[in-house]
Length: 99
Image (cartoon, rainbow, N blue to C red; front, side, top):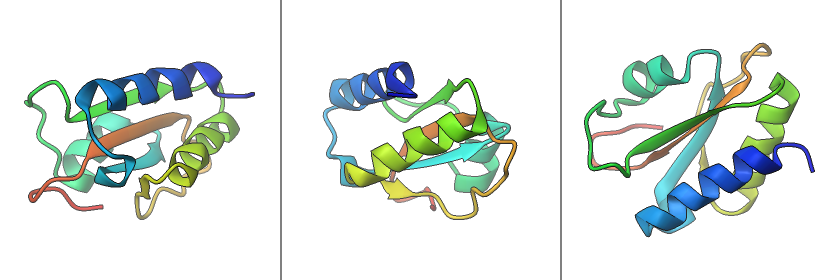
């Protein structure tokens, strides 16, 4: 399955943080850190369970990983349609983030 390594890393992170998938949001971006900070209001500092990024082998793989996570219950980030985006990002939804 394409993206298996990315899926395993992200799902392990979510399990470690003890959160339900519905409390997370996922998207794809060319620059995932900038998208997290500027596009979603995610704090750069945190408790170690705020966000994760993963560079996939291709934009197609990144989309497949994102779609897999959405199918498992994560929220899909608005506006992540860049055809060159090969990084997946996931962040914990809080009262100060938007998706």
